[in-house]
Image (cartoon, rainbow, N blue to C red; front, side, top):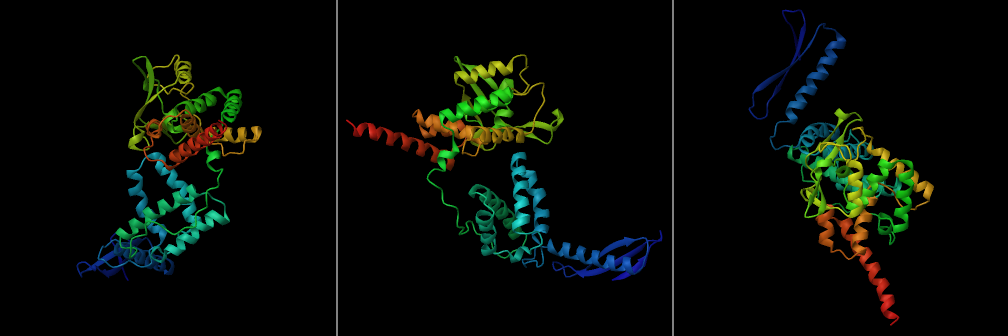
Length: 374
């Protein structure tokens, strides 16, 4: 490193390095207003960091050593954010906190092994009690980051598609807890309606249509239409928000998956809700908003946690349980699985399929008892 004084009186600290692609020497420079022991040491550290940063981005086929997971994440995030939907990004923000805690930002990405990841994920599962879906979500995001690291020559091999994780085994009654029985549904809706009519209507609409909560909140009055005497909801987006003000939420034009674009037939009770909540609103207003005032998604699940405690219901009450309850009711009515999948906008959902098979098997067992008594 050497120092030059420029015309303005500042000091340019300069270091030279060799570009492995061209074999030629290149320079990096930092400037400080003074030259002393402190600035000299600081400049030396900055110059070294600049050189390492440049060398790390030269794709010469060699694995770049010393690159931390945090550095990879900082490079990967802008690319990932630009190509995913807002809701997917928010899911990643949750996963990122777990990645920082259980894997660590300062770990060198080239040192991350399958065994290391398995240990981290099983720690989440068995020491800290996270469920399979949460850990799978974290593992999925982590795999995306490691694939990026492989493309940038930060790791030598592609991350494995699957890890030999000792997943929690599903208990026999786990599926029963994913949906509400008729009496439970009535109790929950009655409780919520008494506390907040708007929230009660939103949950009932979810149960009647099987729509995701973001799809329900993103419904505009003009999305409901009538065709041959029947009413339909045209699902064409989901609500995204960053705050409670009108300017801080918007309808994202692309739903979760391509299957999410659909027209959902509305039963009579849903039509009644539509007429109740569309009254006095023009076609571009959100159906379930009051004076265009929004509330945080978390308020809905907070209300359901209250209901769970007050009503002593031993099931995880979240907005998604109404969607699962819709699936279970249609299965009870004998509606074919493919019709249900099209209706809820999930052509390939393991949960939807499992609930359907669980409910239909229970119905079959009930009729077996009847037939046995002949």
